[in-house]
Length: 416
View 1 (cartoon, helix red, strand yellow):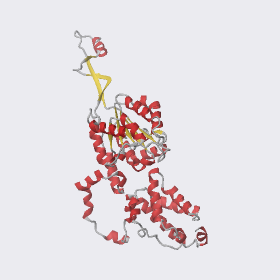
View 2: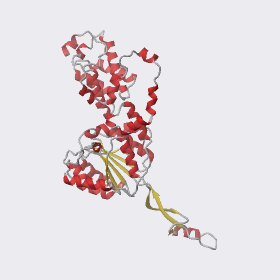
View 3: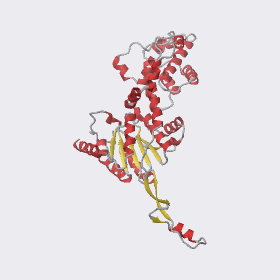
View 4: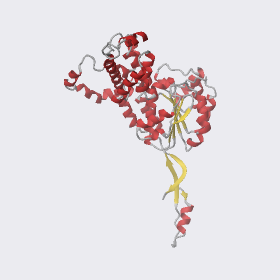
């Protein structure tokens, strides 16, 4: 292939190659990647500088320009191998027009593609740009506001959402409110009907020149408890990590004392990064801070670090902990039971959110699942908007602890 590329004429091919790169960028933009004209020009210049001797070099040249976040890698990889799928495409690129991206697919291969990418690849087929601009708007677009479509969106798995559905889901997550009941704390506040006498205020009032000393009273203050989120960003959770980061940002924007951590092979405190009001800036800061994205999972080691370094700082005053992970530990749950027990005893409520619960036949057979289940108060799925709504409803109930379902899960874990 490299010999053919070197022998091909370069001058006439540059415009067609630039057009191909431009249309590839359009496909990525339709799939949800933020790519503008400036990126396209940079990609053309980068390809001209790197050359077309090897397909791998061409892949990584475009990757370096178009991908700036870890969650974009999978979409870019699939789009590249589909858009430039022909093994001889680089050989013919010097004399070809736009590559045809609609022929030659197997049905099972289509099903494996990201849904956003499928829609991007199939958008606008069979119509010229002039025909699209002249065609009047269709009334079918109003169907997105109907109850049935909203209901489908609520039940659709995050992994199966299209680009438009992802945008709608992110807007719904942004409006999410977590009504955790207030808890009584040690600090007090003045109250006319309080059960305790405020001696300091009473003595201060007695210094004033009047005959009768009035007893001042006080009562305990109430405040929402701290919320601690531990989110797994390993490779097995990569398809959900983006939604979970948006979920964590929405909670941090809605209330105070929200502490956010990510873990894979190491623990990362992303609390400050997610406090930025702009969600794009917040996620960019968090992504730059995390180094073990889509890697392995060491749940026991990362929980040990959290218990040793952060538990006394963030788990006071009846803190609620949301542990988001699939429970798959590459170290075979080494030290995990002890760390889970300590975490459970340090907080008032420990809720495990597991996306694998979306499967009806799920059984806690892995070592990590069996080690974690005995030490959690609630075990819930988290894979669509409905599951998040059920989580909100559960947290609004002060005494909720999983009930009979949680006891059943513990029995199944012991049986496994």
